[in-house]
Amino acid sequence: MVGKLPDTIRGGHWGKTLQGFHLYQYHHQHVTQPLLLEQVRDLGIDISGGQLSQLLTQGLDTFHAEKDGLLRVGLSFSGYIHTDDTGARHNGKTGYCTHIGNERFAWFESTESKSRINFLELLGKAVEERYSLDVGALEYMAKQKLPKALLAQLEASPLRCWDKAADFEAWLDSQQVKGNRHRRIMTEGALMGGLLQQGIPTDMAVISDDAGQFNVFDHALCWIHAERLVSRLIPVNDQQKQAVNGVRDAIWTVHADLKAYKQHPDPAQAETIRACFDAMCNTKTDYATLNPILKRLRQNRHELPQVLDRPELPLHNNLSERDIRDYVKKRKISGSTRSDNGRQCRDTLASLKKTCRKHGISFWKYLLDRLSAAGQVQPMADIIRAAACG
Image 1 (tube, rainbow, N blue to C red):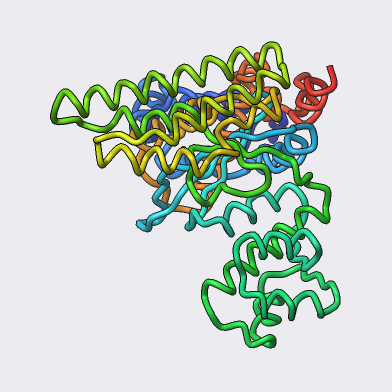
Image 2: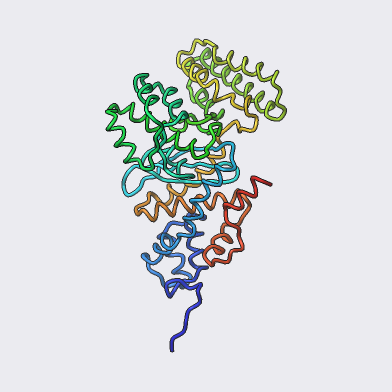
C-alpha cells in the first residue's frame, strides 16, 4: 500500500516542526551542530549529521527572499541607520560581517572586505547595482580630493551609467586611470551616484563608531566611542590624571546638553553648545597623548554634535553594538562558516531574528509560520512599513 505523506513532511522523513526546532536551537539558542545532533538523538530521532546540516542550510529560499527585502524597505522608511562590522571568517579565510539597521529592522551581510566600496555595494543591495557619474558622484570625488585634472575630464564627458562592476572597470581602463587611489575614489563616487540616482537621499544619516568605511552620506558619530578614546588612556602622574578627568567631564557635560537639546530643541541653545564643544576640543593640556585625541574630536565637529541640526538622531551607536553582539556570540560558539549556504543562512536568520525581536514577534512562531506556509505572521516588509507609518 502506498500513501501520500502530508505536505508538512519534508524529504519523506522530517516535519516542519522538527526543522523549525533545529533552526531555533541553532540560530536562537546558539546550540552547536554537534550538540544539537546529540540532543535530537537523545529525544529518539534517528538522524545523521549530514541530514541535520541539510535541514539547517537548504530549502530556506523563503527566508532568504524575505531577508533581501528587509534592507530595501528599511531604507525606504528611515531617516538614519546604525552600522557596524565584526570579523566573520569563512572557509578558512578572513572575512567580515556588516550590520545595517535601526529600531525597525536589522540586516546582516558577510563579505571578504570592509572597505568603503564594500559598504556602498551593500547599500546598493537595497536597489540595483549601478555606477553613475552624475553631479552627486562628482561632488563626492571633489570632496575626496580627486585631482582637478581628472575632475575636469569627468565634467567634460557626458553623464554615463553602468550596471556591472566589470563594465565600469573597463571604462576606467579606457580612460587611462591607473592609480589605485584615483580608481578607488572614482569607484566610490560612481557607487554613490548610483545610490542617489535610485532614490537613496543625500541626507540619510549613517551613525557609526568612526570607522572610515562608513563615512558616507550625512555621517554622525557615537559619543560613547568618542569618550572611550580618552577613558582608555593610562595617565602616569597626578597632572595627567587630572587632565584626563577634566576632558572626560567636559565630554559628558556636552553630551548631557545635547541630550537635553534633543528633548527641547532651541536654536539659541545650539550655538552655546557648539561653543562649549569647540572650547573643549581647543583645550591644550600637558598630557602629550591626550592632545591628539582632542584634535581628532575637533576634526569631527560636524559628526559629533549632529543632533543640533537633526534632533531625531541618536547620540550613540549602541543599537548596532547590541544587534551585532548576538552575531559575535554565535561566531565564538560555533566558529567560522565553511559553505556558502552556511554563511548565507547565518546572515539571513540573524537578520530575521533581530527584526522579529524589534517588533515583539516570537521567533519560534515566525519560523513555524514560514515553514508551514500558514501566512499568519505578516511579511517583515509589511510589518516594518506599518511601524514606520503608524
